Length: 278
Image (cartoon, rainbow, N blue to C red; front, top):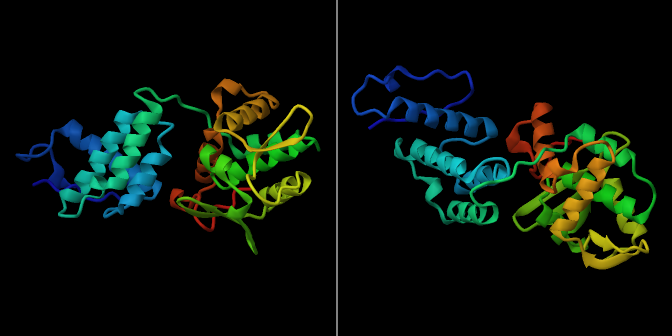
């Protein structure tokens, strides 16, 4: 039985025992695909052995940037890396199965790729905003979504009860755990922006991010996912970017891209301590 070793970095070479000339070994192109998938997984922050939640998080992190078929292949590669070494296969769990089922239903066969909003984009957007209530809301939403790597569903479902002020910033309780919105290291601060929005809108309970009517008054109802996307599109257009290339997911994707560019390991992105990008 062939044993696929655990890759530790991009510089790892194929062991001699995986030579194509050996009888009963995987076809060369298949072996190369598995190896490349495992390298990608480990560079992202995964390991062998892995917990099912880690595999599920890995697949979710790429749900909007890769095709469903690619994610399934990655799942198979990670599974083989475990079973071929006599380890329990984390990809067989209900958690991983549910994640893939959800991705397939949400995105279908063809998934639209969106561009990430990088740190410089975010800073440019918020610097253009004024003092209207809508400006304060959009600034808080964009900075919070980017700095904490939040999904649209997490932004729209967030309530005041989910927030807790701590020394480091604001702890946000999410369905799958908690993240910390850290105090900014510059004049741009997501924590301050969120506090200023809540104070200006006089929000003490209920949804954090609410709609604003044409009279500039908050609606009391939470923003929808479509509403978040429209805000992002409006604000990227204000700095000369094509709104067709961006969506609500661009905030989370941008955090990941900016963290990698700053040399922060992916496994530290969106953890309790946060990467401190801003």
